[in-house]
Image (cartoon, rainbow, N blue to C red; front, side):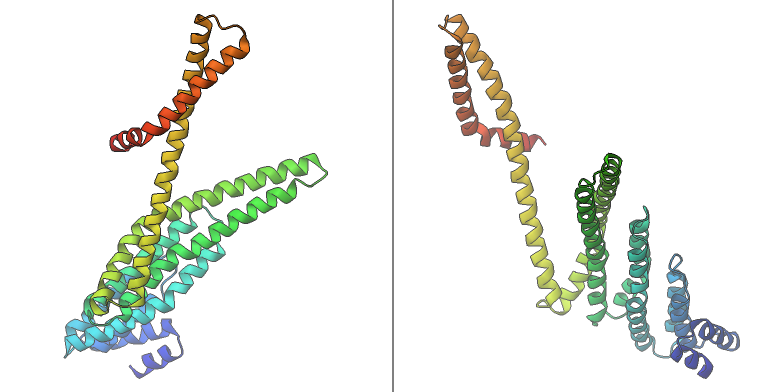
Length: 309
């Protein structure tokens, strides 16, 4: 155990794991060795294969064989929080380095979800400690905010690249710059869509951690921050609804105006208007009256369409 602890102090997790195994071969009920083995198992994991299931199994053994299971549970929870905070940056940095790859964001979300299972276990072991749901809340934010920032930067850079490329004197250079910029823009927009889809899933995890925090401290910064984000999202959704309503109104009005303009001209022709100017005037007046009527009744029409949708 002393050799294992020395290896831990030196952050030599492979060696620490070997010593913990040797301890358990001699004493399978050594709860401290099970605890250390679980921690070492996570630290020796590959980014693409985080061994959380094995670690949780070892931590359960640590609690099972402990003289004081409750105290050991709290120790396990504390170690999990430390491990998660130390390991997550490696996942994030890997994404930042390889974010141009098509499946990079899906891998980030998948790896975070795998790591999150250990943090969820920590919150179950010690329900009175606020640090664990705090960690969960902050990491949920990072999984969305960091990639979103990179996607926006990529989109802006692609747009700027396309604009600069058009100043080239060579026609082929301009064409290449335009096509290359378009390709990058499409990729950036697709990534934004992926992030938006993942945000819906992460939102559930965020709400879970906010609920745990609120039980311990209703005035916690995370609770207030989350409530403000909900209000902001509600405003954005309301603006989108208004925008969509205006879009439908403009499309519907255009059809009505064109139709009434044609009807007006037809009526003018039937009444034998003297010249083309008279026909156009009749058509324009009819179309204008139709526009006013459409505007008056649009709210009722929009309600009907919204209800149908």
